[in-house]
Image 1: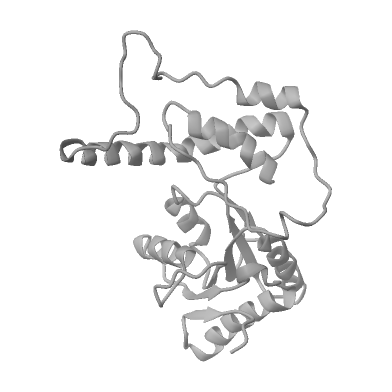
Image 2: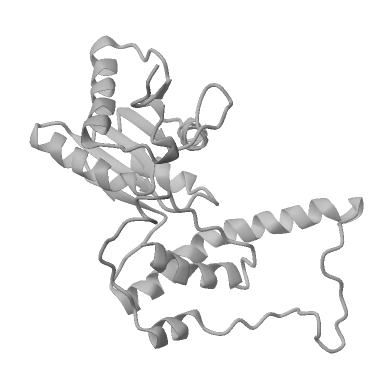
Length: 252
């Protein structure tokens, strides 16, 4: 997955309608320091897919002198920021277009996010990163028990695909948002803030809990994530949310 994302990242960032820096975020240890089998594409296929970068503007271009690195004065900052935002907005469709091309050479399909058993889910978990694999196993276990559970794994965080996520979550009744970081705002994590804003703007109101988990590489098990779904069931049974921002598997 990580190698596939890196290959696509060049095409997205260098696209004429984007031209912005791109960050590939990877949660450490499990995906960076352990051994697993991977499937690599041949170098010549990747080189052809990425292509040569041909910038429209560059320092040594004849008859087009310009400076790189100076600060923007007051008269131009707003326009520069607006242009950056337009590039960011364009990146959503470019990401989908590049993913389609990558599927042709690899057979692997990538979108803005991945939906897992969401077609009839009453209870859902939104998550990012490697813990989604454990989340899928948890969903499978709960499905065998008759619980209509599902999972949504975020792939693209900026620009945040709010409209598409709202559509994916429109029928969910009880929702858990998983943040593998601490935002220190006292009431939610960064993914929690994005999802809650998305739901509000779409006039969707599932009962929602936000969890901080797995910081510093702390292991996340099926039992841990199953307890999150148990919390959602408790909300359903009692009709009370209780604490909406919680820590998972932490010593108090």
